Image 1 (spheres, rainbow, N blue to C red):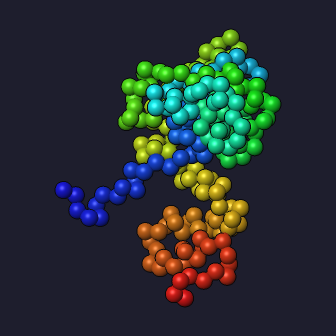
Image 2 (image 1 turned 90 degrees about the vertical axis):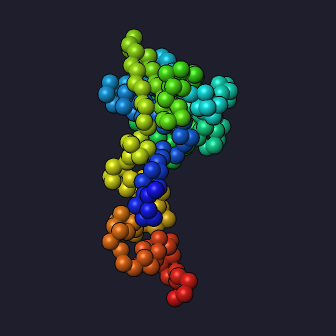
Image 3 (image 1 turned 135 degrees about the vertical axis):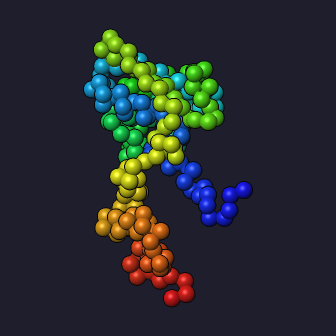
Length: 213
C-alpha cells in the first residue's frame, strides 16, 4: 500500500482545454488538426461526421435538430455540431466562440455536422473519451481519430497551453501582469515557503486583507 505523500491524485486529473462538454473535445482536437494540416476552409466543407460513444451521443449528439440549432451558451457547450463548427470556422474553441452562436459562417456549417454512434469509439470508452472526425471537402475525405484528447494526464497541456488557458480566465479579473505573476507563483508552489503571498496575488482587490491580518 502506498504511503501518504507518495501518490498525488492531482497528477491524474485532466484539465479541459476547451470550455465545453468533454465528449466534444476529441472532435475539436481533430477538427483543429485537420483544418491546419489541410488548410480546409469552411466554404469547401460539404459534410462532417463526429463519431461518438453512446454516452457522448446522449450529451452532445442528440436530439440532432436541437444540437444543430443552439440558442444560448449552455446549448452550445453541449452541442457537438456547434463546437466542431466553431473550431472549423475559426481555428479555435474558446469562451469567445460563444459570441458566434449566430455567426453566418458557423450557422452555415451547423447543418453539415452529423453526430453518430461509432463502435470503434465506443470500444475506447470508458478508459478514454475518444472521438473520430470525418470531413468531406474539395471532393476528398479527411479523417482523424483522437483516442486521448488534449488535457488528459496522458496528453497533458504544455506549460504554454496551461498558461494561455489561465490567462484567458484571469486577465480580465486580475489584469495581465498580476495574472502572469500568479501563474508563475502557482507553478513554483513546491518552492514556496509562505503561501500567504500567493493568496494575496489571487485577490482581485489590491487592498484586500486576508483573514487574520
